[in-house]
Length: 81
Image (cartoon, rainbow, N blue to C red):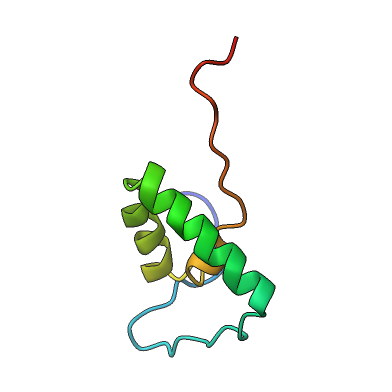
């Protein structure tokens, strides 16, 4: 065997939540946040329904808490010059 033995280095990447890891509970939403989440969800469901599966996958992977992490939805006009 060539080379030297290198000690194992601890990973710097965070562990992805597994089925055995309890899900943390996000803080309750304020009324303004609840309205923002509802509006963003409505816009995505109406204009970009294909993103719902992506958001669901991010939640399952533990990367986001849900619709509260969708910070902004912007619709662009199709007839821009």
